[in-house]
Image 1: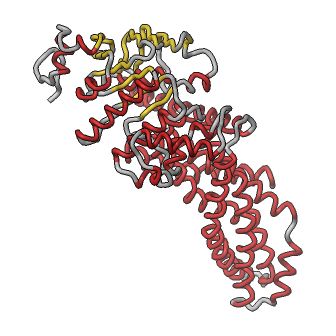
Image 2 (image 1 turned 60 degrees about the horizontal axis):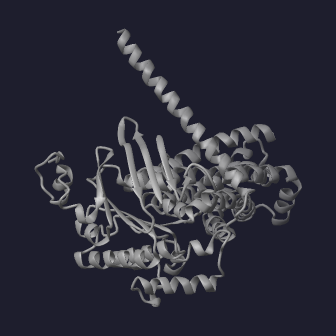
Length: 248
Length: 260
């Protein structure tokens, strides 16, 4: 579904991705872990074309991301941003239905509104928040609205950037469950970036750890605890001592 | 000694290169903005909203600026004209001064202060909170959705604002002329009407359209390329108002020379 080969990206002298190879199978949930500043978000943005890689190839559904119709390419994706990235100037339902109200396959306002309400219900929100503005919602509610927006057009691929950052443990658990349920019922391919290990265990079929600009370890979630990789062990067990240098 | 000179030359070279790079990026940004005006899809709702935001809500500030400027101008010209016993020129100079120069320039500067900063802050915040990235992932071109409607709306609305400002400015001169300087009302109006030519008003409106383009373009460019965090948005806002104001003065001189 998504095949990344020898991906490189540097910002000036700061090499962020230094030959990333990764394969994400169709209808599977891949979670990318790694320390802060290791290039997880850059990798995700390279796939979406928000950042141009220096070299390497990214193939999505058999098509090189550098070629083809950009709009059709992006139509395959839904994305939940770390901070929600909801549009302040639009009410909640228009945020959720944004994609449905634009482009070639645009729906009528009434139809888009109905779908938005249905998606809000799917993420556990009541229809009475539809007319509110994002600033009137709590952080957890904003995350759910972001999730509803990500799935509104029923994309084949969904990206989750730090889905539980800034949430309390209970709300994190709720969001993790929602992500897992939605990915399974939609049959979507999911890629999640996180350093929350409870998210990793709740969401992942497969895990990839990025360190020093390359994929340090990748494999199924079941093998993560017995990987024998010292970098992965240090990270998942949150140890200060180990091969990964901790800046104090 | 030679090393010190080398260092200074290198610094000048780097600054010059950076300046040309910025100009190049701005020209590309402007070209893309203009090209999106003629390429579908068009976001009519966003455009109409900007017509109201930029045009209607700037009316009080432009109107008040014009009113007080017209009044002050009448007093100053009377004071200067009295030295040559030429007090009668007040209505003519107020009308020409307002329509050709002060209306568009002061209107442009006031709108730059209000609109350019607000656009830069809005787009800068959208950049920092990843809303611009979100637009892209939702298959919507941010240039088309955010930038083009604002630039087009400002280019259209500034001449409208300046035309209204011209009228109010002349009225400011009339009020001071008739109430403070004892001009006859009918004579003042006749002198104003007789002196004004189509070119006086149209040259001011052409300037206003160019200023509107500059104001929105610089606001969008600064916000779109805003740095991270509150400091980045603050810097984008400052850059927007300073750059737009300086470019308005530069464009004003060039246009005045061309339309002379």
